[in-house]
Length: 285
Image (cartoon, rainbow, N blue to C red; front, side, top):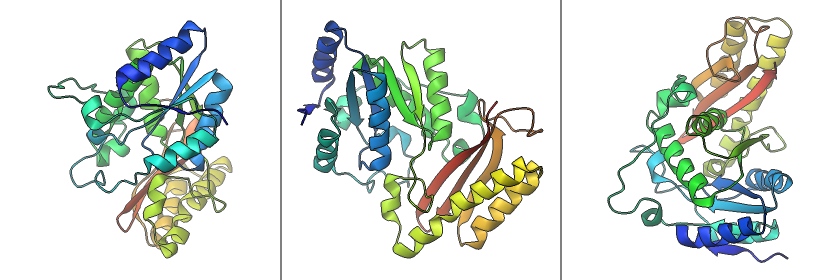
């Protein structure tokens, strides 16, 4: 089994990354907030196909949580994460402290618009994507990676990161990885651990509603009707829907004609104290 290096500081991370680059190795980064599951490990597998060396960051980023969200209770298991990464053949786990990432006097934030202002996640978490963009920019710069892998499950986030890299001319290729799902279709997420057994069974309605709405659109249903039925299906299962939307898959702009542009369905819903998001492609370009 490959030895897993662990870096706790930016200097330690850069020491290893500089050595790999000196050997002409390409480096892939997989940013995570830990509590790793099979979905994260699928990102690792994607990273291994795109680079010689894989770094996984584990950092619960406080700047992307608003007051009243679950920062303090977000699941953390650094020792367990290290074991999973070691078994997956990861080269280095980067696990900085909050003080390392945001030292005293830290005063710079990346502000994002474009897909970050689509009226989806940003409507419910207005400070979220600035926090995401700031920490991701730091991780990309700290690691000097050639490739970074992000899951399509957080689809708006994926487009925000692509915009960030384009706008700041960061020399990194962003590689999307497909959403990993449980047997009943529920998108894998660290927050699924919050669900009771009964709520876990009900949560599968999100994927069913998405797939039925996508099929209806492909068969000629209007976007408004397909989305309305999807929302109704989820609400009838006892969840509170924040949004169920059809959007352009490249910009997240509202869509008028489903046949003329790439289309993505996106949903967010609350089940008790747990907020779940998901999305699927209706059709590509």
